[in-house]
Image 1 (cartoon, rainbow, N blue to C red):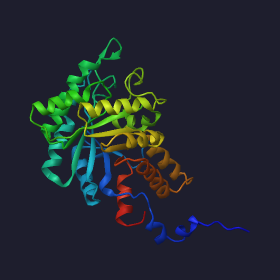
Image 2 (cartoon, rainbow, N blue to C red):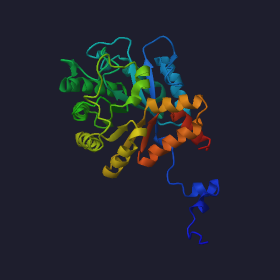
Image 3 (cartoon, rainbow, N blue to C red):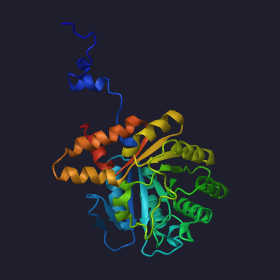
Image 4 (spheres, rainbow, N blue to C red):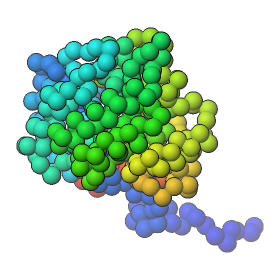
Length: 328
C-alpha cells in the first residue's frame, strides 16, 4: 500500500497544533453590538422573535451599556423607536429625538469608553414604515436625501462617533458627507450599508424596531437577492461619495459578496449578521437541535473568513465572553 506523502491530519492532532496554524481568529475589538432604545416607561421589553434581545428605555440602555463596556466590546450600533411617528419621520431628525437624547446621555456618562454608531434611516420613524418620503405610492429618492442628511447631522451634534446610513437611497452618502463637512464635522466617519439586500432575514428586526412597512415592500430600493455584480457597483459608488467603511447586509447568505468585495476594494468591510441569522440559531438551539456556542462561533468565523474586518452581531456579548474566557 502506498501511503500519502503529506498528511494534513498531523496538524489536527490536538488543540495546540490546531491553534498554531489557525488561519482566522475572532477578536472582540472587531465586534459591534446592535441596540434598540425606545421612548417608554419600562426599562426593557423582550421581543419573542429574538430571545435575549430587548427594546430598552433610555435609562435601561445606559445600564446595559455598562455590561457591554465590561466585556470590552468597542462599539454599539444604535437604533431608535420614537413614541410618535408621522409621514415625514420627523422624530428621526428632531433635536430632542430619542436617539439624539440617548447619545447625549451615553457620551456624558461613558465618554470615550464606547463608540456610538447611529443608524441613519427613516423606517423606524415614519408612520408608513418605509425608508423615505412617500410620493405617489413610492419612496421619493432626492427629497429623502435632505432628511437623511439632517438626521445624520443631528446625531453628530448630539455626540455620535459615526453615522451609518441604511436607507439605500441613491446619492445619500454624498449628501451626508457634504452636510457633515459644511458644518465642520470632517472627522466623523460614515459606515455605509452599501450592499443591503431585500432579504427575508430582516423580519425579526422589524419586530424589535417596529418598522414593518404598512404597504408594499422595499424591493424598489434594497438590492435584488439574485445580484452579485450590482453589489460591487453600489460599493464603488459609496466609496466615491465618501464612505469610510462599507457594509454587506445580511452576512450569512451573502458570504460570496463579502469575499468578492474583499478582493475588489481596500476599504474596511463590515458585515451585519442580521436578526434572522440570530433567530435561526437561537430558536433552533433552544429546541436542542444544535449546539448554540458551536453554531455561533462557526457562523461568525465564516463571516470573518470571507473577508469582513468588522462584524455587527447580536451575538457580540456571548462572543466577547467566550473570547475573554479563551473558550472559543
